[in-house]
Length: 165
Image (cartoon, rainbow, N blue to C red):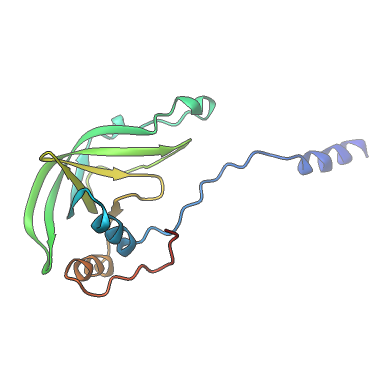
């Protein structure tokens, strides 16, 4: 009887919360955010390549040592966004900015097609990816590509969900 009581009491004990809550990652909302930014962004659809061994490694025992950002040399090859779609060839070295929120880190994959918004600063390009998506969408479908094209051309550009300001 005592072991059952202890088991029941242990199930009621408070435990620390360990989940990351993300809003839906929406291509129209991301377009609107970067379009409204003071910084310059370039829309790109291309294959991202980088050394995956440089991604941050999460050690749950040493969470305090996980850097909030890890910058990795990368390359993206594809096409830039215009009102006609992704038509102009683009191949550039970029800095991949992999961001972490505590023990939750973005996990981009090398060799994957991304629809991304590259920040351009002093002739250099960077792509920020966080645990909730950031400025990149892996393996974007036709609807996502068309949504971004329509947004860029000044057409309808409504996020699929409501986002707090």
